[in-house]
Length: 318
Image 1: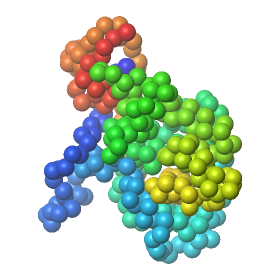
Image 2: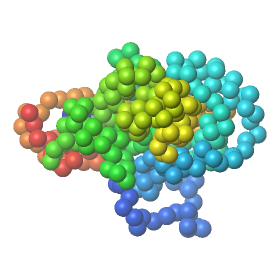
Image 3: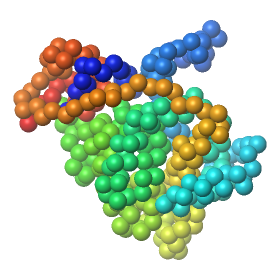
């Protein structure tokens, strides 16, 4: 488990998954978003469940047929994507453009928060993918999966920053029991996500298809390939993929684009204080979080945020 060193003065607010009934500031004419502190903004995002998925599956579907407009010509988007020198070939068409416009023009506040979180989480994911000699660009999938919310839970109970279903998590050796759910651990689940993607890449020899399979499973990608006459080109199998998966790859391209070119769209990362100094200790007997927080003089929320995998505030020990 990880402890924040007492000298660190930081706080990462916990998300409570919204089951309905939370106050909606958008309906309050007197609500002043600009007056909120950084911590209050992040808390508001989490409590309104705006960082659960980005965008939600319905939006992914509708963006494929929407007619969004932008003052930026296609030639600029194409040139910018080319300048990224991505190891993964980044396709561009009207669908990809719609997703880019949606991210950069329709949801700047959410993107600002995600960019702030990315400064903390992306180096962790880059290290994981580098250890497997995989493209570092794959880190952007966490933005699509959960908007970098480690406690995200989807409507079908996919859980954590990398949105693992229960059975898939067990297949990739994640621990899930009454005390621990490693799907909530960004590093451990990120490693499992890398192994899943690597397995898919070994099947298809194509990172775009591996990315698509992460959303809908290898079986659905194989079915789409058969219906496309055996083609393994993404846009050939596109009409035969599940509706929610069709927008997944365009969303991935848009996320990569936005993470690189957000300054050109006048978006600024929200400064979010995250723990700068942590260490890992092995615990060999059962401990309650209150025992640790009393000894280290930190809050239970801080300890929980650093160790989200312990779902009962109890460390079972080894």
